[in-house]
Length: 320
Image (cartoon, rainbow, N blue to C red; front, side, top):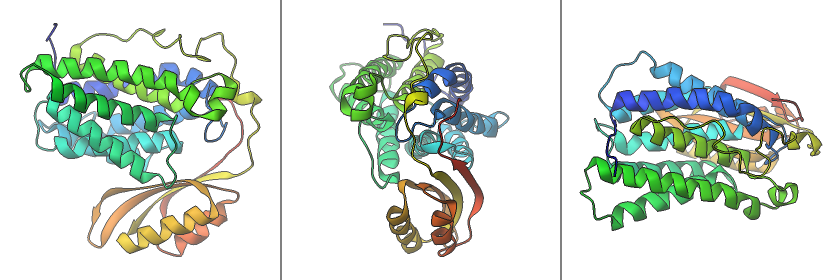
């Protein structure tokens, strides 16, 4: 087994740089198959812009602490997150960072723990999580990493053990992407895989590539239904209900956050709430919701606090 691998902070910074480039290259195809939860054709763009914010935040930051690096990256990503997919990626990265704080080198055990924490953070951030999406990929890879590490005969802290987990994780992620077409009715009808799930696979493949030092080929994902360069932009043929996406950041204590989540669930859907960092009186929260009118959400948000970084985007079909 090839155990040539780099697993320090420089490798993780290289991972984020590669993710930005790869998501930029794939954004058009990801946009083309973006029909869930709304067919607004922007999953690729949202993931790319969120990843770019993460990378920009650590591009000149020097540390030997992997968790510290990813914490800074995830906070920047969450503050600038775009859409469901970008927000969930930022939340997932925040989860990854937690068990890695203080670590100078990634190991198989740490990776398995980090993937589990990322999965839990992402699933719990959504009020109504749905399988057949990037959440399914997160769940499958966390389970695969834990099982692979537990049953491995290799030295737990060895580079070979980390390579083994990375290999199994990426293979499982690819299978999970294929499975989304059967898990989610809208995807099955359109005969495509989920855009966010493919984006998550790209992110994981680039982690493996960055750590092991090889390039992911551009046509790596052309076998997925709807993903070939010649395939049409599926989202353009899907009717999208009128409405807007509202995102903001707000400081709340635990009771205020629970109250806001309940109120947003009552007026909209695709509610995502996740803490960015701790404050004197609670946490700084990133909030995401789809509502018919912006004021439907902003009214209840202002009722519990003072939102900042407010962004309102029309949920209409568009290109890229």
